[in-house]
Amino acid sequence: MTNTQTPPARTERPKAPPAPQAPRLSARDRGTRLLATLFLAPTIVGIVVFTVVPIVGSVVLSLFHWNVIDPPRFAGGSNYGAVFGDETVLVSFRNTLVFMVFAVALQLLVALALALTLNGRMPVWLRSVFRSAFFFPLVLSAASISVVMKYLFNQDFGVVNWLLGFVGIAPVPWLTSENAAMTTVVLVYVWQQFGFSFLLFVGGLNNIPKEIHEAAALDGATGLRKHLTVTLPLLSPTLLVASVVGIINALQVFEQPYVLTNGGPGDSTRTVVMVIYETAFEQLRFGEASAVGVLLFVLIMAVTALQFRLSRRFVHYQ
Amino acid sequence: MSQATLSFSRARHGLAPWARIAGLTVCALLTLGPVVWTVSTSLRTPAEAFDLPPQLIPSDPSAEAYRGVFDQIDVWLLALNSTLVTGLIAVGQMITAGLAGYAFARLEFRFKKPLFALVLATMMVPLQVTIVPVFLVLKSMSLTDTLLGLIIPAFPTAFGTFLMRQYFLGMPKDLGEAAMLDGAGPWRTFRSVYAPLAAPGLAIVGVLAFNYHWNEFFRPLILETSGHNYTLPLGLVSLQGNLGTGSISVVLAGVVLSMIPAVAVFAVGQRPLREGITSAGVNR
Image (cartoon, rainbow over all chains, first blue to last red; front, side, top):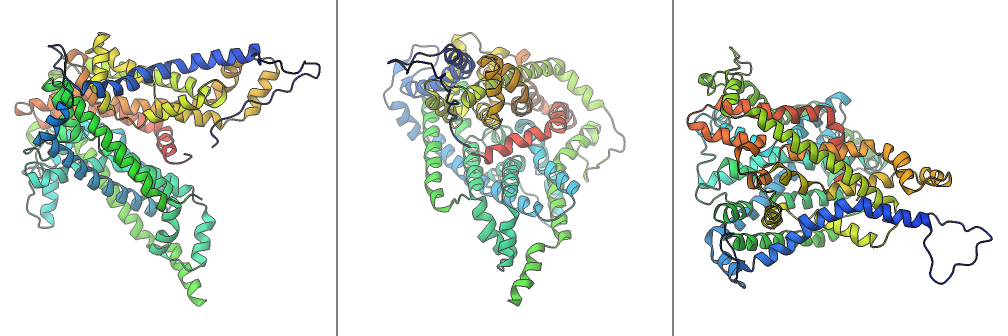
């Protein structure tokens, strides 16, 4: 879609004098401007007050020591120094990156496989049943779903271990061992989130003209190869969006680890956002929390920029 | 080439249809299983909640757990809070996104491009990065620990604005031009020509807003400190905190109760929801 719509060139009446030096606005144009101002005001004011000012505020706050009670003291870079010296913060960044890599990869793989499989021939009603089923968890709240999953993944009486028992797998300490906890958080997150990428892929596949596949089939492309050489390149813009959105969301993971494990055991599932929450709202160290927030922001921007750079080589537009 | 004809028939069937459908069925069961288990366990008596194998249909269904939820938390109050917050945000976003989207799509004014770029850029800013200053801004307005403090910051919606702009751009321009020729001013043109046509797009914005904010946890957790301002997700997690004394079926009954409106919106608003999500991936 085009970016801006130029107004219809208004045809001047023949007897109108040639435009004078300063083009005066007609009453209608002034009306348009007034209307635009009124229409935009709520959105722009809201965005400035609740996003732009807070971003600047975060950066400023990160340079101060402040606990709300005592007056703020200038801290220079010492909050950042403290953050880099804090084992828990460093671990939380590592955890978040590990989480992001596995959660996004798994989510995209599952979503893509399901969308491609669903794209094959089947009755229309069945297709819509499957589509609804895969997208259903998205409408549920991450917090309440995590409460449910806490029971399902219980080591002793959870249904997951009971099911695994049938294939002879010994009970796994899903939530209580440092090694397994992050896996559980990833699984629960992906279970709820894959529907988002799935819907993007379904939309993207629908946008691929049928003739291209038919032509590829005539040229001898089969099953998997057809997907690799034809479908995926055509789907690459959607893949880019799905991975960008997926990564931005994954770097902000909070509800699942907060409810499932509260960051534990040890710090094994503590994420950056959990650290921001704890530092600011439990320990009232607003300056350090802001420093962590600024670093998270920088990380998100860096990863996204890197992705767009890499994508120049892999994304094809029709 | 004889090979070409051979592979043509294979390409169309890639995977046998029954295998595809069987695989999708297994995945659908995995996706819906936890939800079915939640509903069925909430209907068992607390004593039988841990039974393995889990019975899909409780032998002796009981509403005891649901009574337990009402005993432990003020469900009506939390539901009222959630409804107020979510409903007002949804309506507010439909208004702000509708107006701003129209302005970006159909009106001419100064700084249009940079303002639109600003709106798009804020889609990238994670809430968690700004939450501390937002908290302080709200505190300075005495809006922390109030429902208004949850509602007002959520009115502007970058994604909704983007979506509505696309929506208005997709409408024929001749309509507005005809109205203008008939002497309608910019406001009349919007009010009587374009706004009525925007209803389906606004429905997408409303349903997306409802879904997101009904389930929202992070902001309420930070902003709402007294129990009478809690929304449902907060109440649920507090139910779980009583697990030592309480029971799993009570917690799950609470989960089911809080799911009902989300599921209702899923049933009624499935299409707008899907379109809203899909449009994030195409037409960029």
